[in-house]
Image 1 (cartoon, rainbow, N blue to C red):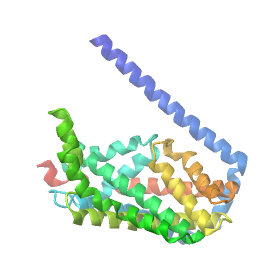
Image 2: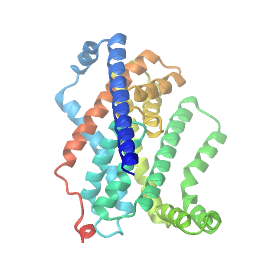
Image 3: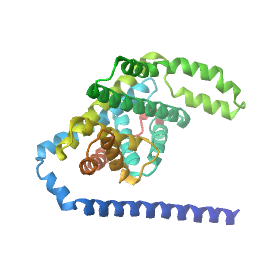
Image 4: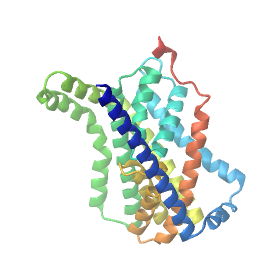
Length: 320
């Protein structure tokens, strides 16, 4: 047993160093590519056109999107004892910090851990809620992108009918949950498997009001976020509005999907470029806009992490 424990410890240490080495390699490669394409001096020269109030306003609006996400969590768990908005804001800022800086979406694991630490809620239940939130995020991003594209190219009515059906799809979650509980779960082996599945599904909305509120807050968050990010891309490039919006959407999709480098270095810019190229825009302009937008996002993430420090964490109700 001691030998096995020592081997596992050595393997974990080696894996940790491997992860760090990969992360440092990606950072180094990112710095070289940006310098080779434009030069960092050119990137920083573009920032000289920004005044301090303009930069402050943009960062403030990004922080507002964090607040909306915190409200979504607080509203969803408002019936649980001890769940307060300031606690949820601290949790959101720390979860965002971990999610944006750690590779391969590993930062997502901080959400159920923090929910258990702050409010004493079961990790399986809050993992189910996280999956629900991510489903809403993914759906709303796609619907926003599709709506902008359809307005731009003036598609026929059939496309809008399909769009409206997709818009209403989250409303089916309550009835689908009932079918899963009565059908699929009963087919699982009795015991831990069934209890785990039931706990995960308990994190989904149980009735219509919380479902509709979480959906409305998701729309508010992403409408503000993508509009702001598209505006930032427009400031730094000569792209048109459609290119900038779809580029911003591509960057955010890259951060939601499992393929995610440490701090999103390279993968976020690749998402922006992919979105812009899809609409026929310039890849070089897209990369330039993606780099500048990403710098702002990393800055806002770090500021959010600092702002989280004085906020209350563990609630009194969960500590009793």
